[in-house]
Length: 392
Ligand SMILES: *Cc1c(COP(=O)(O)O)cnc(C)c1O
Image (cartoon, rainbow, N blue to C red; front, side, top):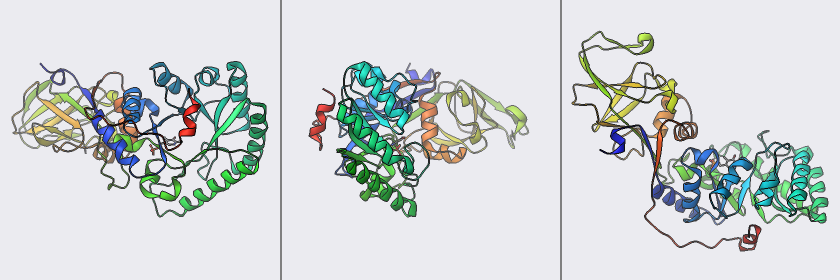
């Protein structure tokens, strides 16, 4: 009895992650950072990191220092950058294990310098500039002062400024004029850093969308998350979805016309039909907002999810088609057998595939399995070999 007949299952195809990594690497001359924050967008940070590093990525990126330390704990020695921490966070273990830290403010700079003092080694930092989305990164007006303080600290040996980073707010829409503005802001931030005597070797601005859309934004390194997992805002990059979610049918019932289904009776049968129950719901990351629109693949056919999506279960209208307990429905997947994709579910729920994949893959109830990557590639050499020393 295979496991998918017993319980809902997320399967992550690492061969697909490998192929996506290779496709993204082929789109740029820059070094590739694999972004594995939020547990690799729900796909498993460690297996995704290992796969990406074996197929073209040379560095790893995460939001928090805790996420970075978890990668070190799993034995990953590649350079890792963490870009989102409170200045009050305990950063000494990160500096101690060579984790690189983004610095978006003077408070952060002081915190990193203190952690470097505690760790007894220089902190490797990337100064982080806001280039126009007023989110993370230092404000334009604060940048020169931040560079000045960083240069002074670098002269003491406490820190080394190895990078300058920014993040574009509208890269998904290549024609948006804010992209050029963001690139200009970034260039200006780099010039300002240099004028303060800093020599950042890694300038990085682009994430997945700009890798695919905007070669002028690539610089020395690109940070790709979405694309590793198959999220392709251009629809033309040949990326594939790496995650599949299946669920077994646990009950089947035949009902007459006029039978209301689920909480609130939001849907009523208009004919006699067969209903199949799947044991997963919004507690497992299926968005309740997709109620009334969602579909699954059941025994080779797209069938509608009817009534409300509840916390633990959904009802599928199988019509007159044969279905029995133990049959396996594909809730989402690459779409190659006709199943809905994460993009379909995101549309039904009015959200992004990013949110959907992260929520489904990081759920605590659905088991997650990894299909190993069977292709092996030669370890590529880094286009910035002088930085390989940064974690020895
Ligand atoms: C999440 C994130 C990325 C990755 O972006 P994708 O669009 O998923 O490739 C890159 N940089 C920063 C700062 C991020 O927060």
